[in-house]
Structure formats: C-alpha cells, structure tokens
Image (cartoon, rainbow, N blue to C red; front, side, top):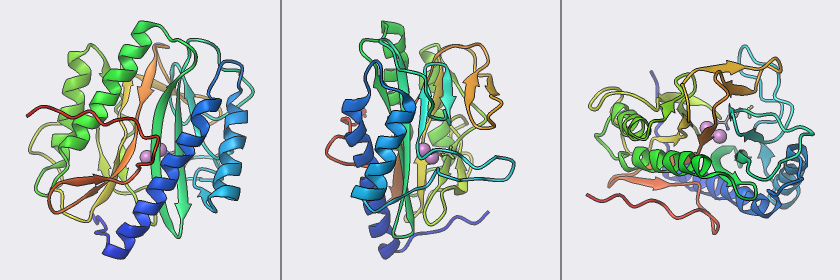
Length: 266
Ligand code: MF3
Ligand code: CO
Ligand code: CO
C-alpha cells in the first residue's frame, strides 16, 4: 500500500484542478433540462473544458485494465444508472434525476467531482434519495482528519444510507487522486469505525457514495462501462475531492456554484 502524500506545490495544483472541475458543473447546470440529450451535455462540457479552461477531460479514452477506452468526456448517469453512464442520444425528461461526473486534468493534476441534477420536477421519493445521498457524502467528509481511519468514513456513509432504507453500492469506491486519476487508497463507502488506513495530512482522495433506493446489486451493460441497479431502482451519487489537512480537511472541488455543505451538529 503506497499512498502519495502531496507537497505544498502539488496541493496548490490540486486546488486549481478541483475548482475547474466544479466550474464545469456550474457551467452545465442551466443546460440540464427536459429535451436535452446527454451527448449534447457531454459536447458542451467537452468544449468548455478544452477551449475555455485549457483542461484535458480525463475520462476521454480512459482505459483501466479490463475496460474499453471510455468514449466520452463526462459521465451522465440517469435514474437507475449508478455510475459511468455513457452520454448518448436519449433525451432527458421531466422527473429524471441525473448525475454528471466531471474529471479534469490541469497542469498534470486531477480534480474529480459530481453532482445530482433534477430534470424539471422529480417525484418526492427521488428527491429523498438525492438528499440522503448528499448527506451521506457530507457525513463521510466530516470524518476526514489526521488520525481518523478510512473505516470511519465508510461507517458514517453506510449507517446514514441504511437508516433511511437505502443501500450502498459495494463494487465502486472513492479513490486517491493526484497525478493519477485513480490511485491508492480505495475509499469504501461502507465499513466499521476504527478500521482501515489511518489518514495523514497531505493525502488527497474522493468521497463519492453511490446509494440505491432498492437493493445494492448492480449490473454492467454491454458497452463495458454503464453500471445500472439490478432491480432497476433509482440510484444517486455525489462526489468531492478532499485533502487531509493538519486540522481536518479541505474540500478541493469548490466553486461559486457549489451547493451548500451540510453542517453536522456535534
Ligand atoms: N469520475 C469517475 C470517478 O469518480 C470515474 C469515471 S471513469 C470514466 O472515479 F472513464 F468513466 F470516466
Ligand atoms: Co472519483
Ligand atoms: Co468522478
């Protein structure tokens, strides 16, 4: 296990990459409307990243072992799609929920963040899932400080999801991030307190829980990327990239349009 501790210079570059990734979400938000296709959203984001930001969209042609090269620049995961939804010609419709996941590379460093968007007015059950998942992410992030363990993060997320009657996807997790898109450690979204790797200042990783309204089981589609719930229940996800600081943590994927954090009591 080798977790890279970032230098002050690395951290400054991670802050920039994180802000830029978040600004892509700010940019695309007003375009997430009934009638838009996910490939239109992908093209808008691609051009913004490349032309306006001078960034590389990290997903494009990304091909980890066992995967075909990813064909688009962002992931768009609609309704029962858990993650890695490949943008296509299907139109968003009133009541859909969609996750847009952005990863940019700037000056050699990655910033990775995703948000949920409502298309028109989704039903109350969909909004409950999205809000509970948002709180799961923030409860996980709230655990991040030197001396805490990765299991503390997983436990905070899992216990909040399950007390709301939802389930945690096990096959995908948060990840260390820096010069590499996915590096050590794996940040599981379930677990037991006081277990797993001990956090140290200078670590950077994502917290990105995928929470299903029904059962936790998933299936991969024939495109080799798209992950859906086995029971076709709705799924939601939020993601931030965080830095462990001497006193706690800093969220790196912030911009003017970042939704308000949930401040937890206690
Ligand atoms: N952004 C995703 C994550 O949070 C990874 C997407 S890989 C891709 O880790 F190739 F599908 F883009
Ligand atoms: Co990620
Ligand atoms: Co991501």
